[in-house]
Every structure is written in C-alpha cells, then in structure tokens.
Length: 534
Image (cartoon, rainbow, N blue to C red):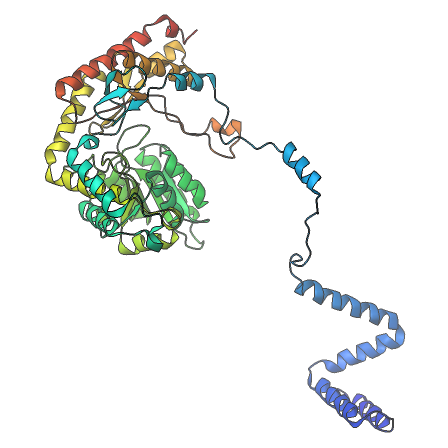
C-alpha cells in the first residue's frame, strides 16, 4: 500500500478515536487495516473499490451481488436435497393411475410355432434315465435328450449318499456362502475339483448359468477389452453385457481372424492408459459342438499379453482321459489358462458351477462375484454328488471309454450314412449336433423358420418311433438392438441335438441312430417340405 493510502488510513483511525466508538471496535478496525496491508495486491483492490464507489456506487453493489451469487452457485449441491418433489395425490387419483397402468409382459407373445411345439412337448415321469417313461401315454422311450451321459442319475450309490447328505445337512444352507452358507462339503468339493483340474484353487457357485455370467463382470469393467468368439453361448453373452466392457468379436474358431483382432486391439491401445484384456471362448461350443484350438489361443495370449477365460461347461467331465476337459484333451498345462469355468449340472449329474484359477483369482470372486455373494450356497447334497462323480471319473476310466464307444456307434449311423444332415460336433462330444446340409437348404429355399419346422417334425417322428431327441434352440434377441442390426448378429444354425449316454448298450445306441436317420429321411422326403414347405 502507498504511503498516502497508509496515512489516510491512520488519519481515519485518528478521526474515529475522537468519536464515541468503543476501544475494542477501534482495535478491530486497526487490526483489519494492518491485515489488509499484508495481502499482495490489496492496494490495487482498495483503490479500485474506492474509485468505483466514488464514480458509480450502484456498480459496486451489482458486482458484489454477482460475486456472492457466483460463490453460492459453485458451492451449492447439484440438486436440492431438502425439497420434496413428489406431487401429493389423493387416494382416488392413486387408484385411477393403478387401474390405467398396464405392465409390460415378461416374455414376448407365443408364436404359432411355439404354441404347437409346447402342446406336443413330452413330459418325463421319474428319473431322466436312458429309458424314460412319458406322462400321459405311459410309453417308455429311449432317452437321447438329456445330459445324463454316464447314467449317474440312476446310480444307487450316488442316490444313497445324496439322501444321507440331506439327512445330515438339510435341504439347503439358506444363506450366501459369505455368511453361514459355506459348509465342509463345499470346501471339499472345491478342493476335489481343483485337484482334478490341476489348478491351485477353485470356487463353486449355486447355478451353472450364473457362473460365467458373474465371473466375467467381476474381472472386466467398463473400458476393458474382451475378444470373444462369435459362437459363444448365451450365459457368456449375458456376462459380456453385464460387464459393460468393449467387446470385439472374431469369426467362430478362426484363429487367423482372432490374431487379426488381437493385433488391432493392441495397436489401438498404444499410447493409452493400460486396460485389462481378455480372450473368451468355450471348450466345446454349446450350439455348434466343435472344439476350440486351445494351444494356439494360448500362444496368442502370451504374444499379445491377454488373459484367457475358458468356459468348459460342456467339456468338463467329458473330454480327456479322466474327464479333466479341454486342457487334458489337447495336452495343455491348465495353469496357462487364467480362469477355467465349468458346469456341474451336466455330465456330473449335480448342480451349480465352478471357476478354477489362482488363489488370488478365486479369493477375489468371494467378494466381487454377484452370483456368489448374493445367492444362497449350493445345497450340500449337490456338493456331495459333485465330489463323488469327480472321484468316479478318476477311479473308473471305463465310464469315459464306454461313452466314447457309444458316440462312435451313433455317429456311424448318422453323419456318413445320412444324405440330409451333417454333424458339426467334435468326435469326442457326446452331444451330437446335426444340421441340414447347405445344398438341401439352397435347393429347397429353406428359411431359418422352415429349417426349424423341418427339424421339429424330425423330433416328432423320432418320438413316434420310440426315440426322444431335441433341437438346438436359438438364443433370445439381444436387448436394445434394432431390427436392422439383428441380421448382423451371429445365430446358431437350426440343428437336431442327440445326447449320447453310456447307460445304453452299443446295439441299443446303433438302433436309436438308425431310427433318427430314418426319421430325418422320412421328413425330408415328405411332400410338406419338398419345396420349402410350400
């Protein structure tokens, strides 16, 4: 502050001392003046205020108001938390709104094709064994429509141990694992599966569908990148959707296209903050039946610095000498796969699913995987069954060999001998996928709807001749996708699904294969489908 200004301030102070102000007020004034002098640039501010006030006092008031308003606006919350914005309604108005409200349906309207299929859908009475009894007619048919590959559903020892588990632990734990839902049988099942796979640790979930759809979002978040096969199953797609990650697709089982996508992702990420990157694929593909090329995927994982999430829901318990899955089938060290997800509700005749990996990966899921944290734990009887069936696969390799013999027997009656369908499943896959050959689709101009109609007639014809099979069902439409974009989405080709079981003898399986082949021939030669159903 200049000397003139300081002298003026002291004169004002001297003048004020002669007035009736108390000494404390004068002391406060002097302290304020001296403090103001210590602030850098205070002389300029005081001179500006004095000159603006003398020239235009209203301007100073307006500027002060704008300054206070700006401070108030910056410090105010984004919205008022004290004001209640709800409009009060009377009881009559509430009743009127409730009467006018129409809830949206949980599912789309049933089509004529679905209605006809549901009306004739067979219902099994009792266990879904190799020979199943149908409700209504009471007929006994050969069951090739369930995943009871080793006939564990009819194993008396497993049944007795499951009953004993119910008597010991009850029907269910009625609590998530993190509270009081974890029991000793759960810990034993996790240890048994981890040892069987050759992985450091394992975690089990209460539902097979929720396993992969919960594991993916627990590790991959918004901004992370996932490279996935176009043919992955519906649970994987739900996991990708929930994760909100950036998803890049590669053509089904095309390793060259996979490498192209990985190169593109790496190139786009140069110079940007590091994100987590995953490759997601299946061991045995649910809707196609073929097998992933795991050694090449691992090579590209190491080359481009990705992590692998391998879904072995349909390959665990089936592939390999002791049912360890794709890693054993293709002689791959399982620890090179970051996460192995599998289902216990298929070949193992239990329920739930699992994720095997390192200790860190497993422990992370116990707090971050929604299906584990917020769902009741797997019932003890199912955990016990899983441990027992895993042990049976290791102790009785003849179970797996017998299933492989039956797979070869039924395939010999279908793929090479039928002129109408081709098998897309891997030779070791007990789920035989049969799709109409492309030349017949083109010759008869069969649309996807027509193909589903042909295959449903094949299912009905097989059932009429004493063999129960089913179809590959298409996945639900993706949420939020426009109709014009649905054509670009990958869709599994319509196909028959024949589930082989080791509970039948070789001659029974061959006979069932002949029935299926003849049923396909009968339908394809019928007048109804000679010209695309026209």
